[in-house]
Amino acid sequence: MWDFLVVGAGLFGAVCARQLSDMGKRVLVIDRRGHIAGNAYTETVEGIHVHRYGAHIFHTSDREVWDYVCRFAEFNRYTNSPLAKYKDELYNLPFNMNTFHALWGVASPEEARQEIERQVLKVKESGIQKPRNLEEQALLLVGRDIYEKLVKGYTEKQWGRRADELPAFIIRRLPVRFTYDNNYFNDLYQGIPIGGYTAMIGRMFEGVEVRLGVDYLKHRSDPDLQAGCVIFTGMIDEYFDYCLGELEYRGLRFETEVVGLKNFQGNAVVNYTEYEVPYTRIIEHRHFEPENKEASDTSTVITREYPSAFQKGEEPYYPVNDERNDRLYQQYSELAQKETGTVFGGRLGQYRYFDMDDTVRSALDLISSIR
Image (cartoon, rainbow, N blue to C red; front, top):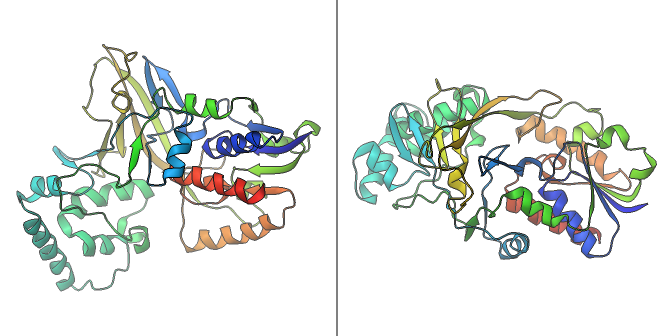
């Protein structure tokens, strides 16, 4: 019936479906959720485009990818400049001269560099030479002040474990900039699609049949879902019924609230780095699209983001790419290569964290390889 069945109506599936449809292929897209756009889904509340599954900011240095997404949306000039709150103190992220001035009162890059080097030297003199865990890795990279106030609590909340129990490789580097630049990303292109991601991905699906609320793993034998090739973007271990064991993920929980203020925190993203604050950040969605004239003048929408342990049946967010899980994924990947007529792609199908531009690039490359 179909040349291709795309399982998953998120960004990866949308790019695949668009490319295949433009090639004249008969494509069906299904998703077990009740909406398109996957975790990039935006819904309108109080005239504000709310990122239901956490902040999604498109950024890339890949000109082909940027030109591709601009076919389906006009992007605004949003620049990601998050703040970090530790107790009553506010700091700019990523770590830059504004951060260092707030921490130590320094005004020049050389002063900041010397302070970091002084603190790292004290760490080494305490006997830490080769990092055995994340805590020691971070201390050797940026010293104690930045680690204690801006890294430790946030990281422990994110991973659900103490920093000295986490492997060092999780933090291979910590970006330190000796400039007064609050732009979190170094990429050439950055922005939010005007009107939200749901509208953008909806345009990708124009002319393609999309069926929502369909669980492929429960209905894969249904006659009307048969296709010459299946592109599966769900969890690779779930596809194989966890026959080799379960891959680990970290989960997230979101609390979204309408607040009777036009402006709650003055910034789209504020990270809470203190361990005693249970959420990792508060997102105020209106600041992603300040040009939006439909947004309420009397209320705003905020979301508190809580990391959580992943439970089967919930939405998986972050792959835990440690040695054990990467080894297990490799075994599933070997099974996948033997699965005739099915290819696996995307964050869950390939068990790796993807930025949005990585998602687009991977989907474009996949379709080029199987056309």
